[in-house]
Amino acid sequence: MTSSLAIVNADLRTMEPGGPRQQAIFVSGDRVAAVGSTEEIKALCTVDTRVVDAEGATVLPGFVESHMHLFFGAYSLKVLRLEAITGTAALTRAIQEFAAQNPDYNLLVAQGLAYASFDGGQNPDRHILDAICPDRPLLLQSADFHNGWANTAALQAADVLRGRDLGPGSHIELDADGMATGTLIEPPAVATIQARGPHGGREVLGLEGVEPAQEVTQAQREADKALMREGLKYCAQHGITTIINMDGNLYQASLLQEIEAEGDLCCRLELPYHFTPGEPVENIEIAEQMRRKLDSPMLWCNRVKFFMDGTLDAHTGYRVRDYPDTAGHKSAPLHDPARFSDLAVELDKRGFQIAVHAIGDGAVRAVLDGYEAARSANGPQGNRHRIEHIELLDPADRPRFAALDVVASFMPPHPPGCGDFPLEPLASIIGRDQWPDAYTWRTLKETGARVCFSSDWPIAALPPLTGIDIALTRQVWDADQKDERLSFEDTLAAYTSEGAYACRRDDHFGRLAPGLLADIVVLDRMLTDSNAGDTAIAATICNGVVTYLATD
Image (spheres, rainbow, N blue to C red):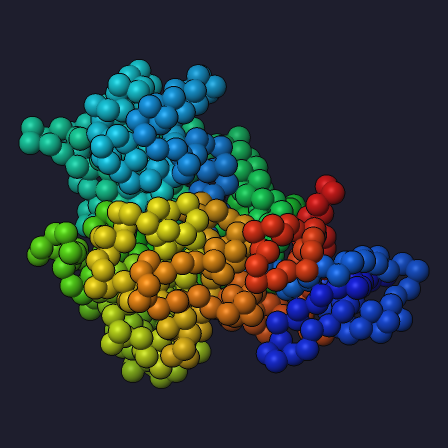
C-alpha cells in the first residue's frame, strides 16, 4: 500500500508563479497528489494517512542548497571554529584549549579565521603560530577557505618548509632566504598541509575534488561515509532537500552511491566533476563516466565545475581594473580564457551544465565569453550554465546573463558586513568607486537574469533560514548605494523554485504542485519578511519521507 501524508492548517507557499497561497497538501508515496484548502485535503485522507497539523506555520518546498561542499562541510563540524574570535590573546587561548582537548590529533585544524584578526591587524606567520603551538602541526584556514597559515611543525611534516611548485594560481609564500613564511595561497597550497590531517588527506576532497593520493582502506572508507552521513543529516535538520555539491570525483561518487544503496541518502544530491587548471581535455571523459555512474532521482551528475579565480581578500580575484590598493595588479585567470572557451563549447555540446567560481569582474567576463562562444558554436542548448559568487560585475556585462541564459548564483552571507564577514578590509579592497558593482543581486534580477541563493557551506553558515534573514536585512555601505536586496517572495524563490531551475530540475521539485516530487519543509511559525532569524525547522520531508523532525 502506498503511504500517504497530509499537512493541514498551514500557510502553504507553493512557489508556483502567481499561484495563490494554500492551506494544505496531500502526499502519496514520493509525489504531491493535491494542494488546496484544509477541508479539501482532509477529504482525501484515509485511516492510514499521517496527518500533520501545521497550526498556521509556513510550509514551503524543500530548500535547494545551490552551492556547498558536503565533505568539507561535514569535516568542518569536527574542527575549531574561529569566526567569532579576534585578537592574539583570544586566538591563542582558543587554539591551546582545542589542542589540549584533542591530544591524539596529528594535525590541529582551525577554520574561519577572518583576515587581519591578530593584533595590529596582521595575519600570522609561522613564527607567530610557533609561539602558540610549538610542538604539534597547526593549520589555520581563512574564513573564505582559500588561504591558510601553518606553523613550522606543520610545514616540516608536509615537507614544504622550503616550498613546492604547485602550478598556476597557488603558491607557498617564501621569504628572502627561501623558507616558507607559513602563508599558503589558494587551496592547493593549503592541501599540502591538510594531507597530513586526521583524514589522511581525504578532507581535501571537500574543496579541491581531487582523488585520494593513496589507497583508501575499508576502515577509512567507512569513516568517510560516516562523515558524509553526518553532513547529510545536518542538511536535513535545516530544511534542505536538495544539495548541489560543488566538488566531486569518482571517490565521492562511489561513497554516495553506497550511502544511497544503504538507504541513508536523506537529501537529493548532484555531484559535479571538478575540472582543475591545466587538466588535459581528455578528462572530460571522467565527467562522462561520472554521469553514467550517477543517474537516479536522488543522486546524479550532469555538471562540470571550474575555478576561474581566487578571492578579493587575497587579491587573487581577477579584476578588470587594478586593485585600488595595489597599482598594476589585477590578478590573472586560473584557466586560459581561450582554452576555457574551447572547453565550454565541448561541454555545452555534450549537454553538461557548467558552473564556474568567478569572483572578480575580470573572471566573470572571461566566463561569459566562454559561454557566448558555446552558444555561437552550438546554438541555445538549454544547459543553464552558471556563474558562482559574482562579487564584482562590470556594468557592461550585466545584460549578458539574461541574453545567454546564465544563472547568477549568489551567497547572501558573503558580502562584507553580512553574517560572519566584517565590513573591512574587503570593502576597501573592492574600492568605493566599485561598490555599485559589488554583489548586485537586485540589479541582475532586474535585467532578467535568473538568481539562486546558497551558503557555500562551510565558508558560511549553512541554514537557509539564516541566509534568508541575512538577505532580507543586508545593509548598504553608504547612503547613496543602491539597495540590492530582493523582495521577500523573490528571496524565498531563490532558495526553492529558482534553485530547482538553476540545477535543471524545476520539472521535478522546487514547487508544491500535483505530480511533483514531495520535497517539503515545515517551519515552526508563519514566516514573514522580519522573523526568519527567529524561525526554526519543524520538519523536513524529502521524496515523501520524513528526514527530520524537531522532536527527534
